[in-house]
Image 1 (cartoon, rainbow, N blue to C red):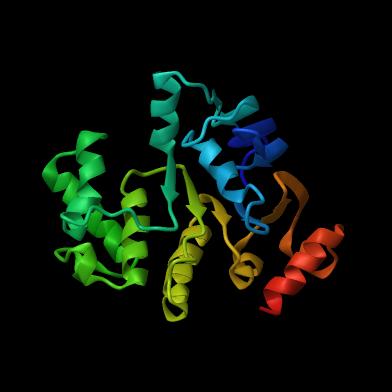
Image 2 (image 1 turned 90 degrees about the vertical axis):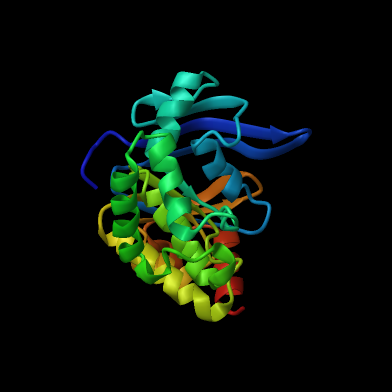
Length: 248
């Protein structure tokens, strides 16, 4: 962590879906280069939290500031936020009619204005980073789930974000494919990328996270370094959750 000013700051953020309150006065700071793992039971607000950070969901109250920019509905703030925040989803969201390299070059060409040559060079660099440069000319349907998720990570990296958000990136994968995706995410974490990862992969969390965030019923119940929260959780809810996950 290299700065005192958080690159992401949430203050008393609330989000409703109809009468259901998904986030309840949530406050959280993330420092530049910090790796944060968010966990909690289904419906606890984890995915909603990170979807609000890049404005895929609009919060009703409170403030979200990303790298000095306050999130609003203005097109200018949205463009700036989306330019610096990448997101990797549970489902890979690749265009099935495009090859892997076409999926990766589309954003840099259309949004960043890169030439075909420069976009392809960037795409190949990141395919090498996620260890599948030999899959560049294939279509998503020709890849395994783990390979597709690595393509999705490379696609986010091609936009050169300052922050990467991961929404349960391994939950749609077969068990043998989870390790290969976590390996790529671990490499990203060691490179200094600011990351917020929603996941139940507690082994990954213990190895990689600087900070654990446990959510339940729309609230942040516990925050702390992995060594502390795993060995001596302050809340009974987190203790019970960890026990259930580890015994699963």
